[in-house]
Length: 190
Image (tube, rainbow, N blue to C red):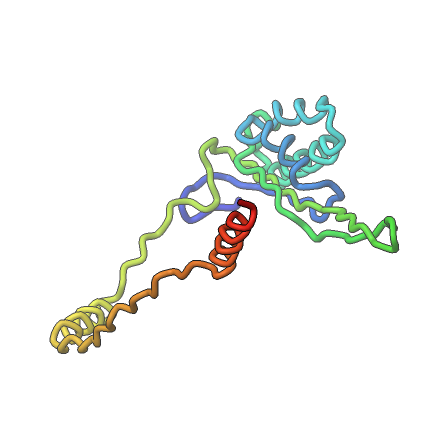
């Protein structure tokens, strides 16, 4: 019987590696059965329309069988809960399709790694409670000494830079020339 450090719940698991479905499609189905009783989840997966549901049904049945193997006192799947249901990315197969002008279009065929964890405790989580890591007294002492040294040192002299003055923008000479030509032409026309 597998016992964990944070709780004394009975746990069994099953993993399906590198199945040829995208994680996004698998998560849609897995999210439906997470947290359900194992027998209800099996029924749900058996009648789900998605293509991956058949493989997930087999995987969950395997996790229940693993639990029965570890603990012969279990009668059936109604005593177990789907405590964790994880879908992770597997490797990606890369294929190429010919496209116009000699280009190649990448096709990514994604795979998934799916894990079911069944437990007799409905609230079981494998990560458990997080440990709070306390710093060692030596580290705290070094940090305090560094703060004291930093306050005792004189502040470095900072040279002030004179603000650079911007030169006023000049008018483009082309505008002046055009206005002079226009006044000259007006004088000739009269």
